[in-house]
Image (spheres, rainbow, N blue to C red):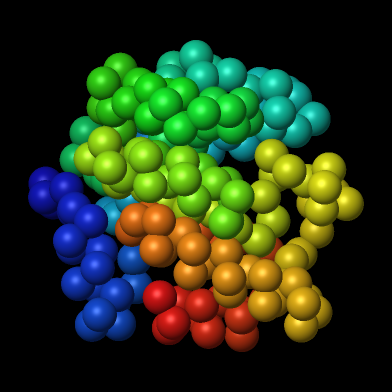
Length: 198
């Protein structure tokens, strides 16, 4: 059985140009298949609301929903690096609440890291969570929790102004201490530029 990779392994892979493979999973069987296939990491996304719970979006997903699915995924993939996705409302008020909810993912579900959506506007949350010793992944571009503000589930960074904003958000996320960044529905040229810049 392969050794579980750490954040240091992922940074070394980035430096040497080796691709990191990851998949989203929501339950024990999918996680066990992912680990057997040799995935480097798994994200337990709040998209579980649409995929497994039948919601129209991610907004109704609760912390307890996420923790339950994260536990199942951890049982299915005990030797894979796993991110828990912080749901809407779990990090939007105070830095302290963000840290407390991030801690739940590690303490209750055995996650290796957490993911949250947003750029500059969540920088203080990222800093507080990383200061608590937790690995954070940022998430910009199409951010489903704020899809209403984006006009729906649409590609982002298609124009100069929005591309500039994504670059600024990416830099702010890195400066706040996040060690991973997810870019969703962003043009490949912009994604490559950001990946090379960080």
